[in-house]
Image (cartoon, rainbow, N blue to C red; front, side):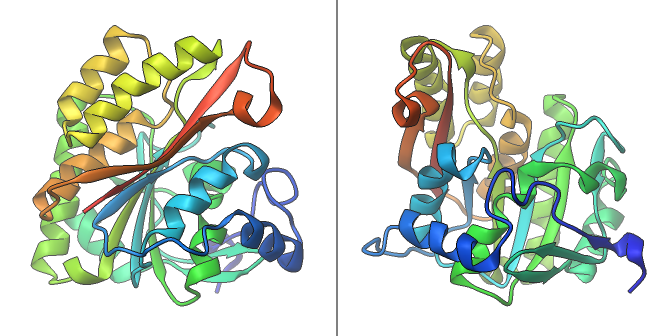
Length: 273
């Protein structure tokens, strides 16, 4: 496979260990070994360094059955690439091994959705999808992915992308084998009490499966939730795939880990079924 189609880890050794054994050991300490597993349609996971948000992500993934196809939707922090970028083919590498892109599903989504573009540049250095992969690989080593990153917050477009993704999944009869993962952290760099209060408002909208309410809350309360737009896409798709309920698995802030409550980042893990 040509070099440009292999996406190498961008934040291994920074956000999580670069050694496979060290990474397995760290995730093994974080997961909930007693968690009851559910078949879920979608979920929301944080994407900070494992020292900060790893427990939230691990507990959430521990409660899910990982499916054969994983559509990953995250925010574009780097600004590179197209506004709505999908990497349509290739392989993603992590210390735990290689993950193939489901190029059949990506091509179907590209042909259906006029907003998404096949663009590798947006993915090369973006961490929001990469940090989720080792948690998924810990529990399942043979899934394929559809990587999407978003750089815009236009509600109408976000809902349209969600609708198009859901229609492709429904028409390809892949609903039972596909899960959608929205990658986001919550409030950034505010005092603990303020962050928790703002995040409660956003989380409640997500638990109500209401992407329009989420958008309104983010805008009216100035919630610095970096992946609210990917979460809107996920919610719009999940409801068309039959989602009826959502459950908060865990919420915490960086202050709960470090003890510094003056300027925290919030993290939430939610499953949708």
